Amino acid sequence: MKVLFATPEAAPLVKTGGLGDVSGALPAALRREGIDVRLLMPGFPSVLAYAAGRSEVVAELDLPPFPRATLLATTMPDGVPLYVLACDPLFDRPGGPYLQPAGGDWPDNDIRFALLSRAAATLSHETSPLEWRPDVLHCNDWQTGLAPTYLDVLGGVRARTVLTIHNLAYQGLCPPEVLPRLGLPWDVYRMDGVEYHGHVSFLKGGLQMADRITTVSPGYAREIQHEPLGFGLQGLLSWRARDLVGILNGIDTTIWDPANDPLIPRRYRADTLPRKDDNRAALREYFALDATPKVPVVGIVSRLVPQKGFDLLLGCADEAMALGMQLAVLGSGDVATETAFRARESRYPGSVGVRTGFDERLSHLVEAGADLFLMPSRFEPCGLNQMYSQRYGTPVVARATGGLADSIVDATPETVAAGTGTGFMFADATPEALLAALERAVAAFADRRAWRRIQRAGMARDFSWDAAARTYAALYDSVVTSG
Image 1 (cartoon, rainbow, N blue to C red):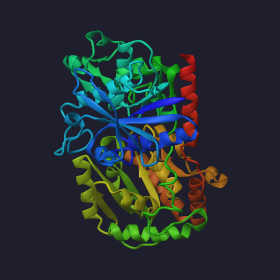
Image 2 (image 1 turned 90 degrees about the vertical axis):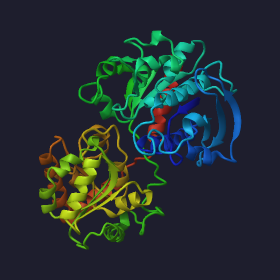
Image 3 (image 1 turned 60 degrees about the vertical axis):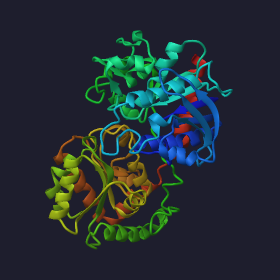
C-alpha cells in the first residue's frame, strides 16, 4: 500500500499545534505497519533549511495559474520519506506558516494552500511526474482540503482519497472570485461542491469529494454531526456519516516518556513516583511558586483562545485558589485571556505563575512537575496534552468533550477502587461545574493512597500510535478495495 500524506506541518520541522504532532508521528507508525507512506509539505523556511544539503530535485511542477514549483525529495529525521513543495514566492517567508510576523493571516493563504492541494492532486494522478504513485491520498484539514476537488476536475485514473478533520472550526474560506486564481472551473462553485454561504470553503470541498472522512476521536465524530460543533457543516457530515469515522490520535511515546525524558530534571516510572517531587520543586522555582508541600500544582500548557475554555477558570478563579492549589500557566493567544491570567498572577503572588509563549522544554517540565493538568475546553477534537499528562502521572481535570471524554476515565470512588480512574471530568461548560471538578481533584490529592492509584492508572494507559495506525491501515485497505 502506497500513501501520500499531504499536510501543511509536521513536527519537528513545522508545528503550530496538534496537526504538527500527528503529521510527525502517524506516518512513522504507518510505516511500521508495512505501508509505504510519504509526506508532502510546503517549503517553509525551517523545512528548506533542514532540506539544504540533504535533498534532491525530483520534479518541476508547472501548474498554471500558480507560480512554478520545485519538488525536493528528502527524509524526515525519523526516516519517513518527505517531498518538499518549494515555491519561494509563496512559502519562503518570515513569520509562521499561516500568520505574518506582525500577526494576522497572510492575505494570499488561499493561493498558497491551493497550490499545496493542487500539487497533492497532481502527485496522486496518472499525470504525475513521479514513478511512485500512491494508492491513497491522505489529506489533512482545510489546507489540503481542495485536493479531492482538483482530482475530481482532472478525472482519469487517480488515487483514492481520505480527508482528516483535525479541527472543524477552521474551514479555509475565501470569496468566490478567487476561483480562477485557484485554477478551478466555475462549475465547482455549487451546493454539492465548494460553495458555502456565499464563500468558497476548502474544507467543504474536501468533505464533499473525499472517498472517506476521518476525524481525530470517536466522540468528536459524533459531535460534529450536530450543532454547535458542526460549525454549519453538520448536515453534510450527517449525510456522509457512513463514510465518517473517528480514530483517536496517539502520542509519540519515545518523546513523551518520563522514564527517559532528557528535558526534565528527574526521570521516573510508575514504581518510582516519589521522584516526581523533584520535578515539582523545579517547576515551582521556575514559576516563582511557594514551596508548599501539601498544595497541588495545577499545570496548563495551551493556546489561550476561547475554544480552550479558560474563561471558565477565570470565572471561578478566587474560589479555585481558596481550595488550596497553585497554578503554573504556559501559553499564548487571546490578549484578554493573557491579561486576565497576568492579573491573577499579581493578585496571588507565589500561588500563580504565568509564562506567555511556547517553550518545548518548559512544556515537558509542566507535565512532569505538575500534580494536576487542566483542560476545560469548550470543544476538543482530540487533544494530546491529556495523554502526555496521564503518561507522566499527572491526572487531568477536563471537560467531557471530544477526545477528552474518549481518553480520560473519571476518577469516581468506583473507578479508583477498580484501578481505572485517571482524571476528573465535568460536563457543563460553566465555572461552577469546573470548580466542582477541581474540588474533587484537590480532595483526592489529599488521599495519598487513592492518588497513587489514579496516577498509576494513567501511566498504564497505552496512548501509542500503533493502535491508531492499524485502524488507518484497515481504512486505507477498505477505501482501495471498495474503489
